[in-house]
Amino acid sequence: MFRVTRRYEFAASHRLHSGALSEEENRQLYGKCNNPHGHGHNYVVEVSVRGPLDRATGQAVDIAILDELVRREVVRPFDHRNLNLEVPAFASVVPTSENLGFEICRRLKRNWEQAFPGEWPKLEKIRIGETARNIFEVGTDEIE
Image (cartoon, rainbow, N blue to C red; front, side, top):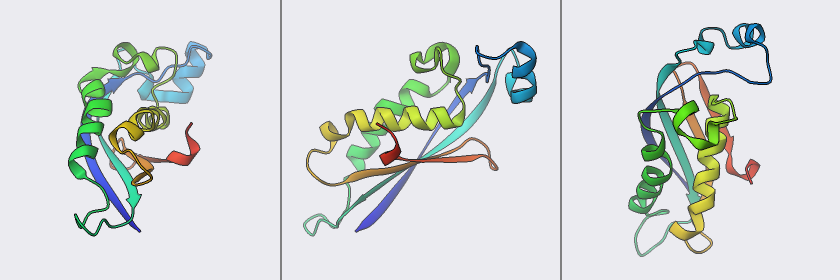
């Protein structure tokens, strides 16, 4: 069994602000990330897939198919976007990197079987680097 991880990048802005909290609570909780004008990140997303080696191709996953799926479901919809204003999934959800990881995972799982019919490969985890120090990871078995 092999794990293959591919890295993708996109730039996006967001504002961390919860409608369930007061202005002061938002400022205290999110600090500078609560800037009313938002702020941006150059996100690095790693998609990890696992599967057995196909003896005919010598691969565990067809990278071209994976790349197209991630470009279509993640990079194109998020790149150079204001997540709060331009991505419907974040209209009422705070676009934290945890929630971004959840949304990326949901999008890939929703379209996985169409891209990869059959038992293998399996989507295993999503890892997001928001900054050099802030890295978030979610296993796909935790997302429905």
